[in-house]
Length: 565
Image 1 (spheres, rainbow, N blue to C red):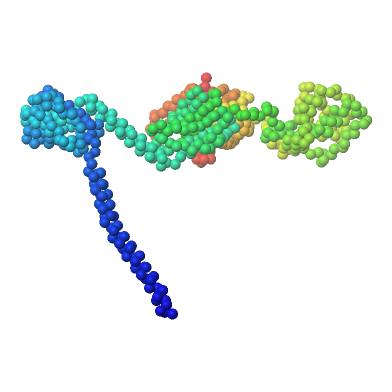
Image 2: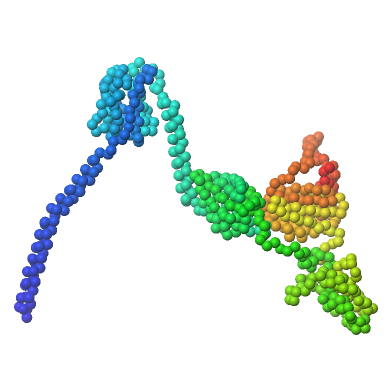
């Protein structure tokens, strides 16, 4: 068995040895070829490196100036140049090969140069001098100025031409500007986008630009376009602004222009726009007209806080229906007995809209339109509580069931002062109508405006809270021993102006001041150094009030005065 196996594997070993010998021969044959290929490639690379570059084109000008000669070499690019004087030979060496015509140089200044030649490789120019000279070399961009100064030259070497100096200065400024713009552009790419926050108010949309440090902004309003210009190349995140923009804005786009950037807001027609800087933010308010204006329906009296007690309860539909029944006979009308304990005041909430019933005013008019039937004698038990028959015009408010004292107390006092508030895109005006001349004072502390009046009448500030909008954050009445005060907290700083007369004071809150009023002149009294004082002349002085500032915790003395003459 083993002999048979040996006989089988012997031819295999012979065939394997032949394959190995063939591979070894092939490798030995390929080695010289690979070596030759590597040598060839190295020679090619060396030849490519040693191949001379194209010579730099240029021109040479030699002129005889008063007392010296000047050689000007002008190339198409910067060529490092070195000038050497060896005896009577002037050698100008170039780092790169140059192609400069030199045929006319020898004849331009024969008093200084006898002959000129250029090296075959173009890396040097050699000049034979006719006299002993000193050399002054100046490089200006792509130009080289070589002055040949005679031995008798005294003083400073000649300067560059004025036009060359001006050109160099302009090029230096342009290079500096380009470098600065590149630096700013690189920094702008590293900065995160500047977020533009947007908030929608009832009558305007506010865009808030968060400004980085050291960036200024200016605004301009043109024909159907409002532009914000920034002194830095900023990238803005306008996603929120584009979502919140009103119908009178068609688009909001940004653009970077070198060292600056701008945001363009395209408008539809004329728009009321106010812009101002607030801390590190720049705020733009764009006013707009609501798409659907609410119907001018007077609000329900019962929904307004502080209504009169007589308007708290309204007659019910059943009561009016009984009064409107024309064919009812006196004997057929049965009035229910109403006990005082069963009478409940009508809730002062709006009536649900199922089914919709006409308003009390409309019901009253319907009652008046029809002839009044002969009313039966009222039941004495009900006269005290049930509503009385409606009388012909003039019609007063429908009589109501007497409300409890707690509800009557919540009504507006009859002798109070109701503040009239009017908010526009420019300002907020609060008017205080008084029944008699009333002295007043206004001042600002922190983020609050204080108003002090010489009156004992209560002041209704519901209109201020309702119409204050984005200017007023809160209003707080303050009772004083000799008058009334109002503390109005603002959402952002505003200029306060008090105008009008003593019967109708108007407080104007706006971003800009009104025309200046009569100033108060303070006089310092130094008669006694130990008791210095300041006096202010008032034509119509009022009361002196003492009030405490809850924020600062200090006591304030406030003097009111009448309106200036």
